[in-house]
Length: 164
Image 1 (spheres, one colour):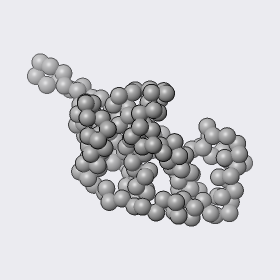
Image 2: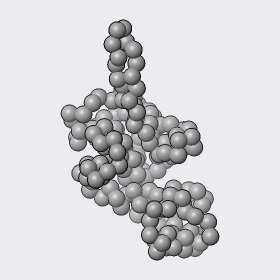
Image 3: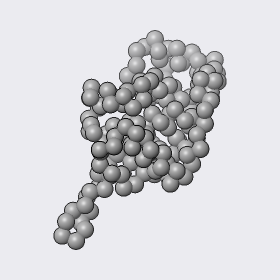
């Protein structure tokens, strides 16, 4: 039995249910029925505006963002779906910090709730660096069904990997 890498931390009964849906060829259809809302955030500029709007709504006092882009290499190279980095650059005699958010390009075609979930996750890193209780509380403050979306996103990625 092949391990489900995106569902590794979940209980065995949930993994068994996902395996059964994959075996029956129904996982993709189930997710498509539940998440039929597409988004039109296609370019890096549109993504920046989308992220900035969510940031302005929930994290007005946080540090400004310098760059927000889709990254086609992200999932393969870093084994991540999004990253948040702070880059220090010398500018004259001072250091300037710039914040970047990179979102895996798989989200360009993913359902809208999944894009929102990953953006909320990366925005939460502006306030909380670690994946701790405060981090997840902030995520659920910004998107109340964050945990369900995260699980369903993992199912979606499993479905993509299984080519369904």
